[in-house]
Length: 87
Image (cartoon, rainbow, N blue to C red; front, side, top):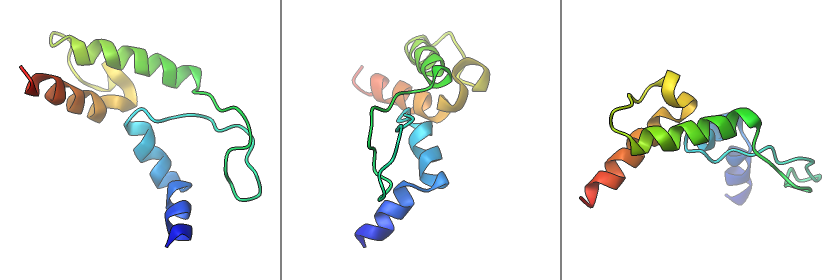
């Protein structure tokens, strides 16, 4: 079961799911078991979209779409619902 979970986590499908929730890094070099073996970092593009997504999540006057928050549309919509739930 653990092997299946690991295989899924390392799959392209899972990487896109993580990316859509702003969990994106380049892991750097991997060891023989495909685990991180060095310092990872987010790409410049992902950092740009993260900054934009925060602006959109906080400002209701900005529409939530691919032009305003890139691949983080779903996450921004979730954030807007979450932050409004306590109001």
